[in-house]
Image (tube, rainbow, N blue to C red):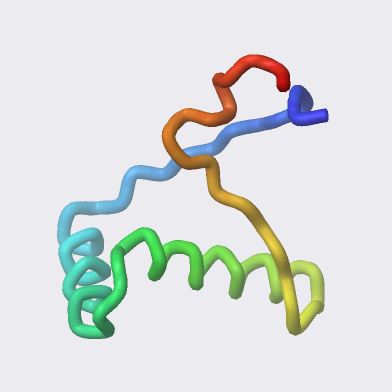
Length: 67
């Protein structure tokens, strides 16, 4: 199940964060969408796959009870 999870986080330098947000705004997407695209590219690269699937937790659903 979902109990064998590891978490990693990286805090981006402020200037890079601002540049990424500006790029997202220019493309008409959210910064989160831009990060999802980047993550999909990483997954595709390390798995040598053209198509990848991953999920995103919304609204703290990982803390919800069973059922």
